[in-house]
Image (cartoon, rainbow, N blue to C red):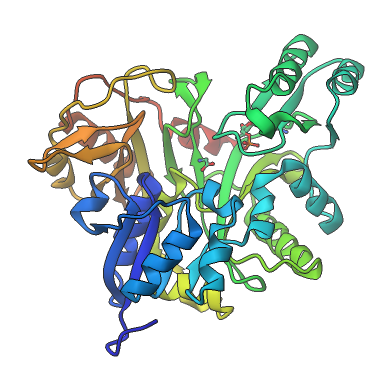
Length: 433
Ligand code: AMP
Ligand code: GLY
């Protein structure tokens, strides 16, 4: 529903840095009306009202949206998409940004995604799937070397074991089948280990037209030098400066083929299709697809995008997306994630955060909130493992990187921890050219 003045009231589902970046970009659109968040975080609640509704309950979201005249529901995270929340809201006649449950299986089941890729003729690691632990273990033994073991379903960023040898792979197989990842691990995909730099390509699509966003590169390990456990993402930059001629076009073509294949199979994919690629010496190969915008990739991609995001997200739902709706600034963005000491293991919450205003006073700096909340007095407290995404945009990569780290220094909270080498790979990786 659009008000007479053309503005649209929006309900945004989610509470991370991705959603704060989405909300910021939506709020910048002249078409943005009232903004609601479910449940939001400390930063989002400084810009929008909390919708007092269970964000995993599609019927409740649809009822809230209908009562308030909301004209666009934006779903940030994967779990509600895979659970079919977008279908319920869409069936109530309300425009939604986010794929249906059958389309979101591209993220919800690695086995399903591999099948679509095979039928679409898209390059990805060789693979086999198993529902029986002994058969899976026998296969891993027969490979006799490095491989990647993946729980089939959603496992909150865990559930992927990159094994350097048979023992590690067997341990991964046992972990999956022992229920460490719940039902997500009752089917296991074993695949070839690919080598090369990684690149994320998010794309908007209405089920037919695919509009690529800018490339980005995440840093998943907790510690400097890509050591330590995997996390939800410790920092990111955009664009990726190491692409060889033709690699970008190839990744876009792969995403287009997947959207076309799904449509041929009766599934309209609308929303964001996120391709995770390995840039191998034989060209880009798909590591995984996600059914939503990346976190923290969104925090460096959206600030560089010249577009009316309200129009773009509505067009994905309406089937009217066009490449002319999106253009890019010729600049660079780097985002460093400030975490609570102990993350991704256990950590404390409720620490007072100061210095965000000073950080944002630096040119080109925006601090997106991830795990924060406001107390009764309006003070900002830590409330998660990933706390803040300190993002800088500048006309050179080096300036963006230096500005982001300068901004990190201005922010204080007990236990503040971060990686010091975000973006170093981008600089080193230029040797690949
Ligand atoms: P995924 O959740 O499937 O993206 O996997 C998480 C991470 O595991 C990726 O970002 C890669 O670093 C790594 N990974 C996944 N699949 C492979 C593969 N076939 N070869 C090498 N690394 C992989
Ligand atoms: N940055 C990784 C993800 O969003 O899945």
